[in-house]
Image (cartoon, rainbow, N blue to C red):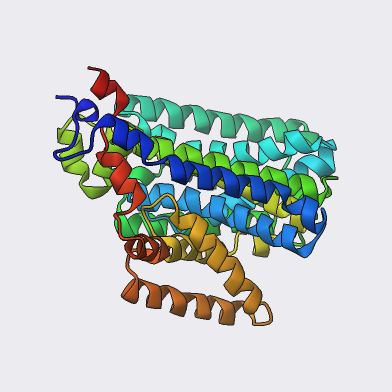
Length: 396
């Protein structure tokens, strides 16, 4: 029986379900139109433009983490590895290749995506012989690169033998790590340790400034960054909303709730988790790319800081984990709190964010999105939309 084509018991007829979201759609389009006109009303380089751009970027980062943890059950504390890789990939591409802004931004998403593939794709193969072939090929490439550098030193991209060999060994280890087979706290700790290991490499990598950081002069103005951040946040929000209304969204949440039950019902658990992990890495890289273009500088301490994990967790938890609107609401709250606590030290700021997160989890376990839904006198929009019959099912 196809659950996507069967209406829920007591669900409204098709005409009612299609007509009801109209006020919501009108409100959404009105909000997008207003946000589009903000630079015209306040000035292209105003404080409001920079403030809203931060909201869009952190909402996108929150969406990426919420997709993995809130909808997929993969609790990650290592999102900073994708953020740092995105920033440094931009800096390296601009400094050494003088690449245009469009290519630099896309590259900022592709590098974290490639790194995520290194972590999950080899172990995604079901047959062990395929994993052996993948790791064997990687080992041969590493040995071949070591021989080539010995014969032609100008091919060395790492600057010194220690950094080169440590990086190659780390990548080989990560390629063999069964990351997606870990769950709960084990997965969270593994992602955090991976981020710390990569940060250590960048701290000593001469090509990336050897710990001193690099400038990111993308030659892009604040207005362009604003519209890119707005478009990215809107596209990611729409994509997640549509995905959660599909059978794919139902399968993802089934994996989150019980992997064994989901697998026994015919869901390819590893394929679902791999896809979500890769999408989260790519989206995180794109959002981080915009952030560092605006910041115009990156260091290992700023790019790979554990603070990033705290920020994205706060955005998702405060807004409401497992909801589409949660990261949007949480990003607004985070930017407000961040500006209020701007004079505090990093540790003090994280402490206050932690206290606010604990208070919200105790008194508002569903986040601010849940509070707004209860005040409105209806169920969360995501739950309601998933219970509506699909148009394909009604046609049948």
